[in-house]
Length: 340
Image 1 (tube, rainbow, N blue to C red):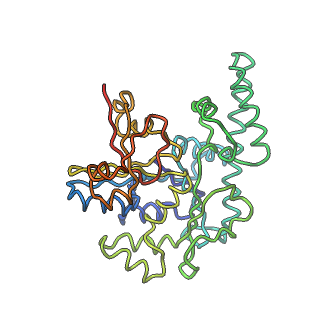
Image 2 (cartoon, helix red, strand yellow; image 1 turned 30 degrees about the vertical axis):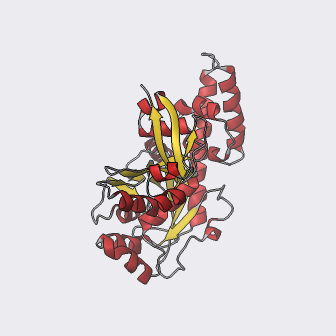
Image 3 (cartoon, helix red, strand yellow; image 1 turned 90 degrees about the vertical axis):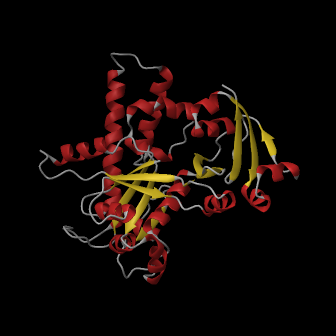
């Protein structure tokens, strides 16, 4: 899953990327493993050669330099750079950072970038509807865009709008920036209580989850050997590493779950959106498996661990055969049967 770190200048975005990557020098992409003890246990049972966790690949969208010709062109340049991500990690600062001119104000900064993004989408939709006067637009798409325009005029981002699957597909080519879900990440002071203080953000949460920690301290933790990080984080009063905490909240924000596959060659967690069918889940493994899907053999993780093998689950009568429309549950251990 690809995520983009966004936020106004001097809020700590680069420090966060360093804390996620575990590199002192600036990295272009941080690959964050989503902790999952279930995969570890399956790896132990199968003595597997390879364990694969769900991952989040985060990159920073750096605010443009001051060389832009105007504030508006600077903002437009930035908004164009952040389009196309699955999730935005929206950074706001409650702690003073180097180069920061004013006192930190998370609510002010959140409202500011929210407003810029909403304005950008309004302009985009206006342009599309204006062009539609010369080149006709599908009536359903036109109606949808008019509805979303009215939604934006209420100073509310589009990720709060109720949209059916086909409607989201119709919007795919328009690059509306506020359609992308957001997780708010607060750069807190080192003496602040550990955790996310949503009260700092006023009334602009709009359903966004919040995670907060001191970025500089989180970065120090990430530079330690992996086996020392959790203990040092707790010693510093933190509830785990920045990567682990952010990964958990990102999954919650997107309502993601994981199904599991297991064997002696590989044990893996596969992230999917809650409500994904068995056939769609098969496509996450390989498109050929989705195309030739026959059925899924499945058992809940706790039941599998008690028995240690699919054969034992089958012998005990708890291994289920599910069809293509079965809604996969978090922790399902799956084997896909297919023919291509």
